[in-house]
Amino acid sequence: MNENNHSDGGEISANTENIDATPAVARKGRDLFLPVSILAAALMVGGAIVFATLYKGGTPAAAPSAGGNNGNAGNVVAATSTTVSAAQAMTLGPRDAILGNASATVTLIEYGDYQCPFCAEFFSQTEPQIIQNYVNTGKVRMVFRDFAFLGPESTAAANAAQCAEDQNKLWAYHDALYTAKLGDEAKGGGEDDGLYNTAEFLKLAQQVGLNIPTFTSCINNNTDANIVTQERGDAAAVGINSTPSFIINGQMITGAQPYSVFQQALDSALKG
Image 1: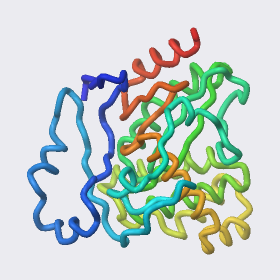
Image 2: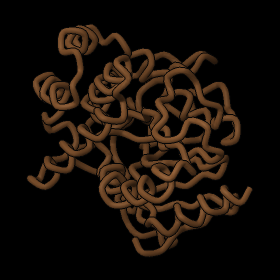
Image 3: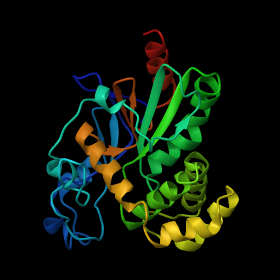
Image 4: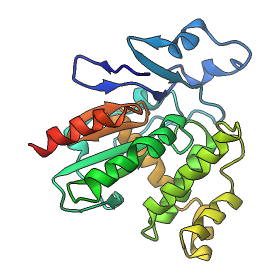
């Protein structure tokens, strides 16, 4: 966990929650027996710790169209018919909520899952330093994009966050979700353990000052579910297959890296 794995393409990788690439049909019934290859994925390989995860629940969806729809976890990369470069992914759209100076020349995009323990680790340990030293000083702007793949509660939490974005409060709700997840983990909680339910979403909505009737309608009707699906498909098109993953002005960083790794990448980007 103290070492970083640098790929030939310059990508920095460690401490991630990964997609299981096995088709959904082949994954049924594996709760009683995990292949050695999956167990090995949790070991230290080349200095990087990979947290391999089996997707639980759901049925395989149809292959996505070029518009970016996606199937279940495990099918995301194979089912994506369009690929784009990390540089192309830097183009921001109307749903990209910017934290910081909208005119900043350096953009840090995070692809995350609200159930991912390494995403929560980044949120609590590294993100505050980035915000203090780069975002609050106007040098860097941050964007969070959903890559919800760990289970039903991942999708539900992402949908709730998008409902908050409808009221221009995605980042406040993002922080509330991860704070709740950290509290859950401290009590021994895990993925799809019941934390992310309607009552919890409404409690967090009140905390961040959302219009409750509007928010309630949004989550009950899954109003923004298509946005969550679109973001996951778009992420897969870039080559994202684990969380947290980041792109800084075209440079890919994978995993909950220490602050020093982001500092080096951000400083390099600022120098142009």
